Length: 200
Length: 200
Image (cartoon, rainbow over all chains, first blue to last red; front, side, top):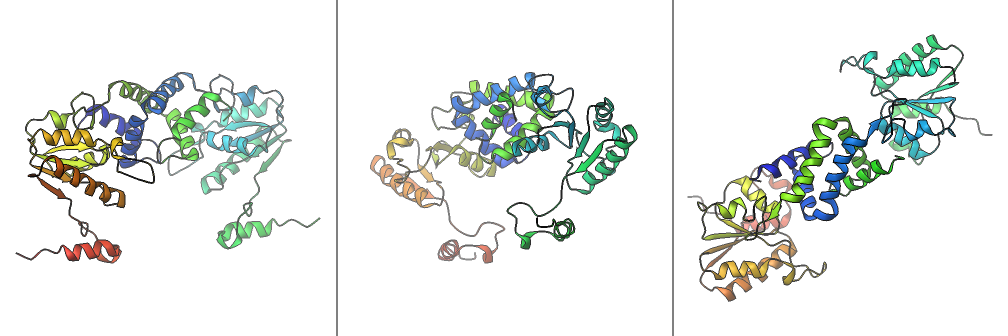
C-alpha cells in the first residue's frame, strides 16, 4: 500500500478491462504469491509480446508474423471475405470453425456519436482487396447493433460501387442454438419468425 | 487464436483471479491495442516486481525492502500488535487509517478441510515477537468466518501460554456503517443487539 512500485503495478493492472482497483490489488497479491509460476512468466510474456505481436498487413488480425497465419494459409477459400468489427470477432468465428475463407478487420464501426468516420476504419484497404477481383462473396459479419448495421449498409453501398457482380451477404438473425424462446427479446423473436424455414 | 505466443499470454492472464478465458482474451486485445501505454509498462513492472518485491522478515507484509515501511516506522505504536490473515487485510486496515500499531500477517487460517495446520501459518514467529515483551495488546483481526474465529481462539490460547499479562482483543461485530438493517443477516443483527452501547 505504502510502496510506490506496488502502487504503480496495481494501477497498471486496474486499467485492464474487467479489473477495478480492488480486483487489481487482489490480482497483484495473487501474482506475488505465485512469483515463479506466474508473475515472472507473465511479465516476460508481456514484454516479449510488445515486441513480437504485429497487426497483419492484409487483414488486421494479430499475429507474430507480418502476414497472419489465416492470410498466409493458401488452403483457405480465397474467394470469400468475411468483414468483422474487431479481432475478437475474427477469433470467435475461428473458434466456431465454420468458416474457411479470409477475413478483414474493420477496427470498429461508424459512429456519429463517437466521431468515427469512414476514414478511421479499414475501409479503403477493404475496397482495394475487393478491387483485386479474386473475391466473389463478401460476408458482412458485423455486430447486430445499430452502429454495426449502419456500417453494414454503408459498406454494402461502397462495395457495390467498386464491384457490381459479387455477392454481399449478412449473418442470419434468429433464435440462438440452445436458446429458450421465453428469454428472447421481441426483436429477435420477430426476426426469427419472419425468416422461418420450411420443413423439408 | 492460432498463435502460440498469443495463446500462452491469454492462458497466463486467465490464471489471474477474476479473469476467465473470455475476459483474459479481452484483456489481451486491450493490452495489444495500448502497446506503448500499457502492454510494455505492465510487462516491465511485473518483471521488476518479481525481482524487487519482498516479504517483510518481521511481519510478512509486502514491500521492496527487507523490513517493510510499517515495521521500519519507529513513530508507530510498538506496543500494539494487530494479527491479520493476509496482506490484503493489512492494506485494508492501513487504508482505513485507524490503526497506528504494528501488524503480523498469519498467511491464512487453520483449516482441517484444506489441511492447514498451525505449522503452516506464521504462528511461531508471532509468539516469538510477543515473547520479546514489548507488546502489551494483541488485536486478533481475523475474518469473521468459521475458520477465522477458530484460528482466533487457538491463537488466544497460545498467546496466553507465552505471556499471561497482555490484553487480547477482537474486532467488534455489528451493523456496518451506512448499512441498512433490512439487508443484514440474522447473526450480525443478533450480535449488534447483544453488543448494544448505552447512549451517553
